Image (cartoon, rainbow, N blue to C red; front, side, top):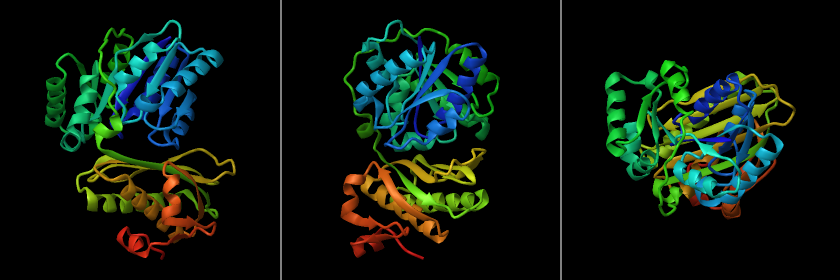
Length: 371
C-alpha cells in the first residue's frame, strides 16, 4: 500500500488537489481511499470528496499530528480490513506538519507500506501574506516537504510565481518545486501527479512540535440544525456571502491582514451550498452542489485564522452566523462545537433561533445583535 500525504496551509487547495489526484489514480486502475482531517470536530470537506465517488474517512478530533496517532491507526486498520486500498491519500488539517504524520504511520504495524514524497501546497496568491503572518509555521511545512507545490498560478502574474518558487527553494533547497493550477488540472498538474509515484526515503529525527501553537492560528468549528422554511439556493447563497463578509470584517478589526480559512456548508431541502473565505483581502467563494437533500437540514462551519484569539473567533463566528440566520427567518439550534464547554458561560440557545446573551457588555463589544 502506498501512502500519499498532502499538506498545506488552510485554503491552499488541498481538497481540489485530492479530488483530481483521486480521479487520476482511479483512471489508472488503482483502488484508493482518502483520509481527511479537519480542524475541529465537524467535517466539511469530506462530503465534497465523497460526492465524487472516492472512499473517504473523516478524522475530526483536532490536530492530526498531536492527538490522532491512535485514531489514525484505527482508521488505517479499518480501511485496510474493509476496503484494502492500494493507495491511501491523507490530507492533514492545514495546521499540521505532514512529515510528523508520515513518521507516526511508519511506527504503526500496517504491513507493507511505502510512501510517496511528502507534499506541501502553497497558494501563490497568498504566499506573501502568509509569510508575513506565520513565517515559522510556513517555513516548517516547506522544510519538511520533498515536493513543494506552488498552486493557483492562474490567479497571479509570472513575477509572483517566480518569487514564490524562489522563496520555497531558499527555505528548502532540496525540494522539488512544481507550479500548477490544481483547479484547472493543467499539464504541470498532470506531471506532478506522475511525480508522486516516486518512493520517499526521507527520515528525520525531531521532537514533535505542537503545530497549533507554532502556527498562531485560532480555530473553531461547529454545527447547527436548521429549518430553512423552503429557502431556495439563491437565497441561501446570498445569506452565506453576507455571513462570510460579516465574519471577514469583524476578524479584520482584530487582525487586518489575517489569512486562514472560514468554510460554511448549508444543507437544506434545496440542496447543498458551500461558501469559503481565505484571507482579509479575498472575497467569499460560494458553490452550489447538485446534492438533493435527504430531509435533514444543517449548517456546518469551520474557521481557522491567524492571530485571532479563539474566544474572540467563537464570538465573531457564532454572532455572524446567528444574526444572518435570524435575518433570513431560518430557525436554528446549536448541535455541536469544538467549544461546547464554554457555551454555558456566554448564553443559552433557544429553539426559536434566538441566542440570548447574559452578559450585555460582552454582547455589545462582540457585535451580537438581533434585527
